[in-house]
Amino acid sequence: MARSNKRVEYVCKPAVMVALIVVALVLHPTHGGRRDWFVAALVLSMLGDIFLMLPRDLFVAGLASFLLAHLAYVVGFRQHGGSAVAWALAAAAVVVVDATLARPVLGAVRRRHAELLVPVVAYLVVISAMASAALATGIALAIAGAVLFIASDTLIAWNRFVGARPWMPLAIIVTYHVGQSGLVLSLAR
Image (cartoon, rainbow, N blue to C red; front, side, top):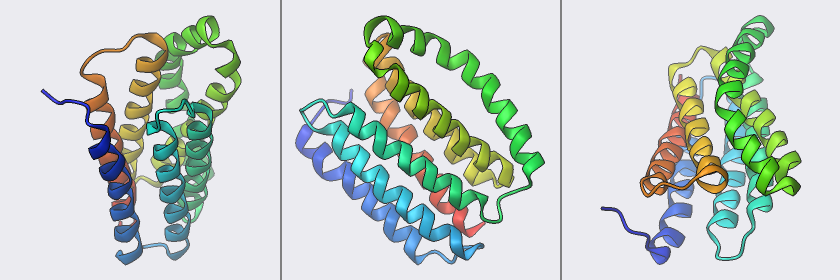
């Protein structure tokens, strides 16, 4: 069974992101301008990781970092990233998923942490835009990465606001890192 080890987490979590930044920098991207935005997204994600793993509750700072990371991914994907029609269709599909998954989380946030409702909704909108942009590209690795990123963040929200389960921390970190890896590797597709 996996156990929490803060020292290992403090080293390994940012180290994975540094490794993904290096991979993004050495890949030969299909679309040149996309790499810069993805590297920015990875750096912002690493900052978000650091905010969220510190003992002090810096949830809003972490949320803001990831919100900016998703905006960078959106801009990156929009560079040669599918038509407006493909993006609109992808957004419609994402909204259907959001309506199902977000309802219990937003209800719990509203009841228990009303002060976080606006930041959480803003984050939901931006991560949904990122997933829509990834879907619109039609690149399997980008789609898989975005879906896994949403899965990770849904588990984080569920764990924090709805109800924690012992298996969630491991599932969160695995889906997050595999999702980020998919996004990075989609640069070469």
